[in-house]
Each structure stands twice: as structure tokens, then as C-alpha cells.
Length: 579
Ligand SMILES: Cc1ncc(C[n+]2csc(CCOP(=O)(O)OP(=O)(O)O)c2C)c(N)n1
Ligand SMILES: [Mg+2]
Image (cartoon, rainbow, N blue to C red; front, side, top):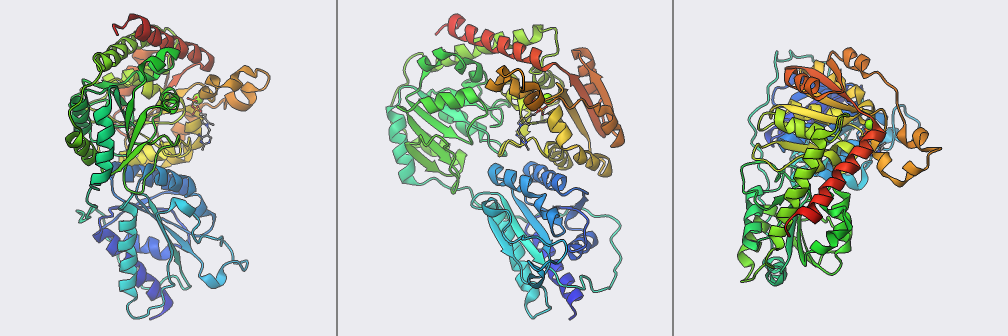
């Protein structure tokens, strides 16, 4: 067999096995060394290939698609810096626990480190971000080669899913000729196939871990549950049941999935960020905390937790996961969060919560939430926090709000309220980057899991304008709420904002861009507004395709309004609420 035919045969075996293992989508960028992979993907119909032009956007698109579908997405790029452009999304996939099968083409080993063109060191280039990394053998047409490549594919899918979902890196060296030269007709249309993916069984918590944690909970008089960010959401009903049995409040991060939906929300608190900004917060210190999911978005909550050095901290995570940045855990329970919640519920002995503990939290939360929302509704200048309240009213049940990092996710934390209408809030919150957000939202939109609205700041939007290309190319529907405060609004909340001679140049960083041109270039519709009636109309009217609704805001004024709203909430919580 010649080398070109060997390349084609090995890659075909690999791709067929990926499809058989349940991979439905691949994001592909053009290049030469990756030709065998690209040709094989273009020729088959089991995996849907999505063309991208920029590897960084391609990888973030794959990330968004994989998150929405809870399945690994394949990535394909050529050798050299193309592969390095995957790095930010691979890091995010690692920390957000999103499965990706990252396939990079490479020169054969004999051409590495000897000055061959477009050759960088790709071996293990994603470091500890990859669950598994392999430099594949060169396809040579040896007996048994197809089986070997099938096995590599099977192993890559399993490693991307278990024990902790994440990216795997498959480096494909190819000798020339890259192809056999045998052209075959391409099917007219590619379609995703029904998957046969065998998802790993949910991890059952160990009896010893459960017993240790249950003993602590049984002794607790002031229990508190922290439901942190989790890809795919935490199991709402199981955690609500545990809270009901313990009579414990749940501080529900906007990314944990518990704030909205039809489950029992009686103990779900959404305004703790404002409550805990107040020094009086230490009066509601718990004696036992149960933590599920990642550390929360709220800085005030994180600081509150870090101060609780005398409390018991029961930290639960999936096997191989360890999310305890303050090293506070006094008990660790590994397992699938729903099974952990159920096991704790069964193992906790007779006990009683301090009278008024949970009722006090609920009353403070209600007072804070009402004060904050009424303040937000009364500002006459455009208030960025109000975007989430407006969207919560405007969007249909089941819609996804994709939140950018920086102030949008903090505004979601403050203003996305507990409600029965189920909305899916997601964000690239593993590494908190402002890069690739638009592409991830487009990838989410490509999953076909319902309408998606992205809320993003102007600097983050600028960061990934290349990503907009995919909208028209793939006929995707995405509404983008572009919160344009002309710079990095978040830095106004930090101590450097007092350094007035340098702040604006180095932190405020106004980009002074008219984004209407960029949106027009990518075939989108653009509306700019500073008032809520126009905002509502523009969001409601955005039907198909790419719609960008720019909300023009003022950074300095928004700091004032945020501080007023948080202060009003804290005042209401600590002085007005019956405790
Ligand atoms: C890739 C990356 N670069 C830099 C940062 C640091 N950073 C965090 S927020 C921010 C400014 C974001 O501005 P914008 O998107 O307009 O949001 P705003 O703060 O105005 O809400 C920057 C530069 C980051 N998180 N990620
Ligand atoms: Mg901004």
C-alpha cells in the first residue's frame, strides 16, 4: 500500500470509530498537512463537519457545541501555530470539563526540530489540560493498522468522557504523499447519525465518605448548601430534597441551573451576593457548609466562605475533581452530585436546624432581591444589570442565555432571579477568559437546543469578531446583546480605579469602535439603543440569523448604579427583613 492510501485508510478507520462511539460533530479549518483528515470528513456522513477559518474560533465553537450536546466534538487543524491557537479553548474545556477530541496534523518525527516548515513542537503541547495525549504512529499500511487507529479513536472518546470529561489531544503525523490520488464522489448532504455513545455510569459515592460527611451534618445547627457552577447544571430536584430534609438554605450560583425551573425553589437564594457584601454578613455564618459544583461567581460569597475557618466544609466533586481553592474541606465526598445528595439525605441522623436559621436567610434574600430589582427598574440611565431582568421576561422557556465574562456574568449573578420559567444560563467560566465567547455561543446555537442570546461586553466582543463569520456560513441564529460601555467596565470596581492618571489608558481602555460595520460585514442586523422599549423591541424582533442589539452604557455611571443597587439590597436585608 502506498503512503497516501495508508493515510486515507488509517484516518477513515479513526473517523468511523469516532462516529461509532457517538461523536456527531467536527470543527475543521483548512490546511495542507491535515488533508487526509479533512478529505475523510468531507467524504462521510456520520460526523457533521463545520468549516471554520480561524482555529481559535473553531475550538471555542467546538467547546460551545460540546457543552450544549454533552458529547465530545472533534477538532481538526493543520500543523504549526494553527494547533497552538486551540490552546485557550482546550484550557477552558479542561476546567469546564467539556469533552473535545482535538486532532492536530503534524510532520513525521524525522522532520521535527530540523528546520522543516510549519513545524513546531506539538507533542503534548496542551500539557496537563489534556486528559490524554498521544502522538500517533505514522500510517504505513502495515497489517492491523486500521484496528490500531480504531482503538485510538475508541480510547480518545472514553478518555474525553471519563472519569472527568475534558479534552484529549491526538497528534497525527503524516508522510507525503498525503493522499492516494483516488478521488471519490462526496455525498450531497451530510447528516448527524443517531449516536451509540455509551456514557460512563454516574459515580457512586463511597460509604466511608458519606458516613463522615453525614456525621458532620447530623451535628449541624446552621447548615448551608452552596450550589456552584456546573457544566450541564447540578441535579436540581436531588439538591432541593436534601435542603428540605436538612432545612438548609441553598445559595444558588447563576451557573448551577437551580435558579430557574419547576423544582422546589423554596430554599433557593439568588441575592446572597448583595447580602454578603455587608459586614453584618458574619452574623449568618453557618457551622456546616455543603459545597457542590465549582467555586461560585460571587466574590463576596467566596470571601465569606474563606472566612469560615471554624465551620465544617463538606466538599463534593466528581472522581478526579478537586475544587477547593481555600483548602477548607473537612470532609470530601466524591461522586455524581445527585447520588451524593441522595446518599447524604439517607445517611444523616435525627437532628434539628436552629429555629429561624433558614427563615432568616429567606427573609433577607427576599428583602434584598426586591430592593435591588426596584432600584434597577428606577434608574433613568441605561443600567447594565437590568439586561438580565429584561431577558428573563422576554425569552421563552428553555432558551439559553450565554453570558460573557467580566460584568455580564456578575450582573447575571445579581439580577437573574429565581423563577419557575426555566432558562439555561451558560458561560465559559472555567478559565474566565474574554476570548472566544462569541464562537462558543455560536457553537451552542449550532446544537439546535433552542434559542440562544449572548450577553457580552464590548472588549470581549472585539476579542472574537472573527467568530461572527460562522453565523452566516452555517446559517445560525444568534441574538447578541452587546453591552457597549466602551472599555473594561469591570476595572472600575477594582482599586486601580483610584489611580486616575493611568486608569483610563491602561484599564478603562476605550476601543472607540463602531461595531455596526463589523456586524454588517458578517451579514448581521445591528440595532443600537439606550432605552428599554427599543431594547425589548429589538430582542423580540430578532428572528433568524445574526442579530446584534447594542446597549450603549456609561462605565462610570454604571459603577454608581451598581453600588446603589447593592447598598439598597444590603440595607433592606439587614435592617428591614424580619430575622
Ligand atoms: C483572554 C483574556 N484577556 C484578558 C482578560 C482580563 N479581562 C477581564 S475583564 C476584561 C475587560 C472586559 O471588558 P468588556 O468585555 O467590555 O466587559 P465589561 O468589563 O465592560 O463588562 C479584561 C481585559 C481575560 N479575562 N481574558
Ligand atoms: Mg465593556
